[in-house]
Length: 239
Image (cartoon, rainbow, N blue to C red; front, top):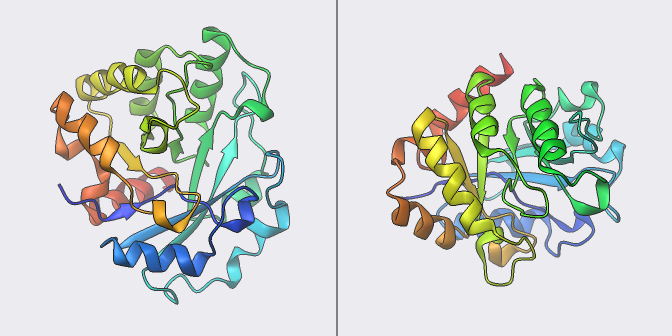
């Protein structure tokens, strides 16, 4: 399998990342990527950029860098109702919208609360992908999450960073095995993403690739391998 896109990356604008957009795009080209999504952390995460950063994305020429860019966001899921930290009007203007649970931005913790939060987020028409649904600190009913993703034409992420030995998200590998079995059962697509916070991590998919091989996960459900399939899926979601 050749992965030609990475749809979850951060630049210095996110506050705890270390490379510029130019450096990230150049690294993507060197890795053989054909598309890179820049998805800065949304305002409620400490140290990141504010609302007007995202509203000013209109100034970007998406084709002025080493490879084509999509300009998006990684939203923070704030509560069990799946509320997020950018207004609808801003979300509608972005190319790609990830929603994730981050410890500093929420007080939810039970399986019921966390599952509810993701179910509501998946129902949000302005969210395309659920980021790193793998952290045992936020337990999930994976069958319900996968079935909701199918019902609302959404994508679930397999996060390479979560699978690294240095990851701070406990239980990620075992949780992904459960999630991916349901994805295969219900035919729900996934994106393997680097979650890069520095240019050297762009296009890093070794851990996800290894996990897919171990599980014999169907290639047709991995959107990273086919640009047309990925763009059609996102277009259908926005439609």
